[in-house]
Length: 303
Image 1: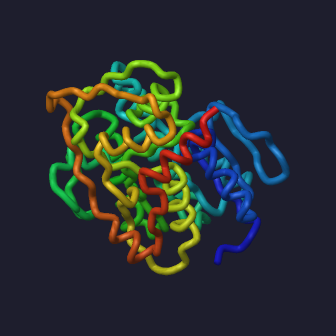
Image 2 (image 1 turned 90 degrees about the vertical axis):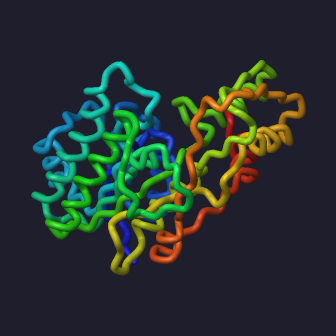
């Protein structure tokens, strides 16, 4: 077990995953240094927030030394393919170079016990094969996916060549009530809540791999606390693989008048679900929020 009052640097500490993760870490008696342009948590004796930090190696090294960081959880950066499409450099700078500078500072500091990276299913690309494992070759289809794939591969070489304890968690699409970027589940629930018309660009039979934010957070905690020999990368997703028609029915259980309009065209590509057997068998983590439980919690936590 990790000793209490160790200090964690958490990037993206005000994000969809980062914000609830801060509270979980504080509950586990860690001290947390949060790094994010936005500050959503009030500072106290165990939480310090940093913003307006230059994302370069020397600045990160100063932070690691000043606060005697023991662990790094890297959830920060551009969080999806819907952002900065007309500014590809912003995606690359905030994902690849951010990650490179941070891990290089960790290598020089040489006192980081574990570095956890939040990677993405987008690194794999369209995922047309079913039940693939972590050995599947990356084939991203957009700049965001390429930035996650590049960061993931860079960190794997630091793991292999510099004896750094790194775990990459490759998440399927994360949903939750605090998600600010585009998400069809969020669109559907908002439409249901506000009783507005919603037309979706796919058939109701389309399936998509999702993970509820609480499961994403718990996978990070499990990976952080795991104290045995581990591999580098783990796929992480929810326990089911819902059709959008099924998602709509679950939302109707909370908003009876919800009637989304589905397209009759197959214009939206299907993404298969990858295998999460590796993290189940090695780390001992498994998801708890199927789509029914996730939708219920999502609705309960809406503003």
